[in-house]
Length: 206
Image (cartoon, rainbow, N blue to C red):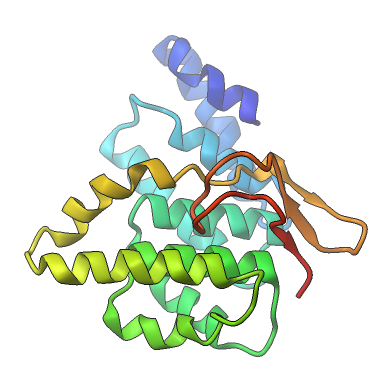
């Protein structure tokens, strides 16, 4: 799937549309990990029309929901944050408020809340501050929220996002692997990602 995403902008329109059809079908497979990879490949299409961008948004929001394959869901939540899909906020808040814990999922939810949320969300994410597996995400998210709140203009979110762009190298779905403890690990270790800091030691064991 990631290879299709890398090629999509090099194809002619007819072939690009055929590739998009394959990727859309894959992104609808909610129980499959490659659904998240398909989302990122669709997001690579620089020629996407407004209708196609709307389709990407609907697919992404659908994969953010509980019951979706965990790898695909993590990818969708990251993409929702990067693309500023504020409609994802309710499910992100519900996930962080729930009893079930997954360190990678929590960290990615916190990261996207940092990109999409407001000052009212700080109390929700601060409760994870003492956990070493989530603390970097918490600090980065709070900094981003406060940065937007401090600007205090109608375009605050847009302006703040420009300064955050270098931090938004997300962990790609094919870089999420199972570790020997049955959790999820994100590789490679030398890249910054949506949850703040780098991926070194970023292994999920809830």
